[in-house]
Amino acid sequence: MNYDRKMKKWRPFAIMPEQYTGLQEVINKQAEVPQPLLTEEQMEQINFTLIEALHTNKQVYLTYYKKGQCITEKGFIQFVDFLGNLFVFIDEVFELKNKMRLSELIDVRFV
Image (tube, rainbow, N blue to C red; front, side):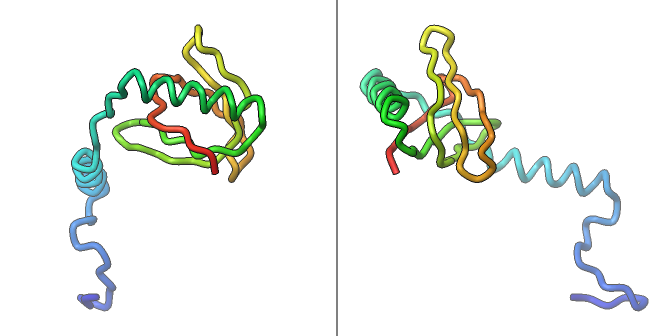
């Protein structure tokens, strides 16, 4: 922590807000990962797990790809539409309904 003219300097490069947002975008771009490709066997396993979780109302870990990141959440499957390529799950934290494409799904596991 530097002291200059009786001011605390926490972030020396964040003097201009435009510069700070630009730097943050560059850092976020570097952290992005490409979407993993799934094999037929992995997709079938995800489908079976989704159907079982839907019918038994068991809690699952969902790993999905969104904006360059792989995100894992815990929740309950409420609805699956294989023809429309979407499913609805209720997350554990906020108990909100989330609609998502099946193509964004990477992995589904029981808790």
